Image: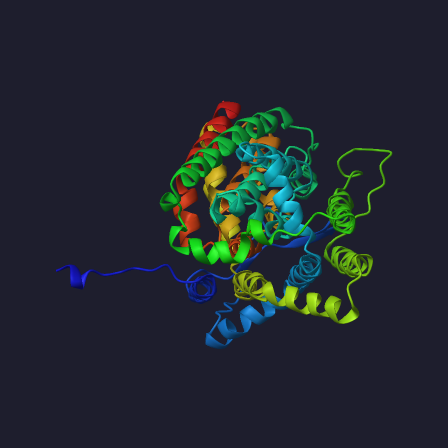
Length: 471
């Protein structure tokens, strides 16, 4: 009988995304097409509550399904190019041997205390997530952190979790995140500071639970590698990321200079994307850089690093080409994931789904209202993974409903950002999730198996805190 056992295997990320695009196309023939009237404000166009109306169906066919990934790629070209440029930057760094040398020096210093890297790094990523919505920017850190953790005896899942869950739990709380809380507060007509005590409590509780969850898993894997969710990929990941002690080059003065330039690049990147003015911080100029400027930064610093180290022109060009090639698959995944949103928008069902949420939430008791609000934002976050995009669409419609349920509008914002934060740790429509997993060589199905219990705990805690704040 054992010969006839059915073996189920999770499809690859590309396959999952194409299936989701096809499913969404089918839904455009089932879900009625509709739109809200929109008004133009200083922050762009926003829907008018109560103005939803049906329009002519725009069902998406096989041709649209085939074109959606390409249109999605065009829409995501900025982040896709950024990914390729980061690969080029790392390709040049790897040519110098400085990163490999630096990794082994870190491991030597942390000998016997490697697990302390987990809470330290996760806390830093979480601070970035909660203050300026650090998300897409984390893509650049995977290639740096993965070798450190795998060489230290952990697995790729641990390294990915440190980055993705660390920054993710910060975005989940979004205490002063201008791209989630700030935009939502503007559309809801409240201050970004309203509700901050609840968000701070969510941040503290969520970060503690997340660190404990990852540290327990990491310790289990280090003691017994067979417990890893990617145990069968051990040799593949070891070859891809880990370094051999015998091959570690000496940490010369020139390599120290390379590592200094490497650190400066990331410091400038982090500083350049923090909107100090939007966060109410005066006296510190905001650069307001985004992917074009960040791509230029990484390319310029990569070339400068090669010149400083003394690489030949051919070696620098080779590092650029080989490094970009290493992350080409990641860039494609990010582009294809945007195809799902393309189908929804072209099929004119995005506003219809939002209207269903508006209808469900009208005239409810405060506790039930905020809980259902939270639950409504979960599927909306799957369909619209951009927190700023979801805030722009949903807040003008859903925030005013809080007045009729005797609930503060700031609580609707907290429900929105916590639901969005949780969903964006697993949704295949998120370029950050699919891109990070692709860089880490962690299959999407394995990530779900690793993270589902944690997400249930965080989701329940968030729901409980929201209901207690509402009643």
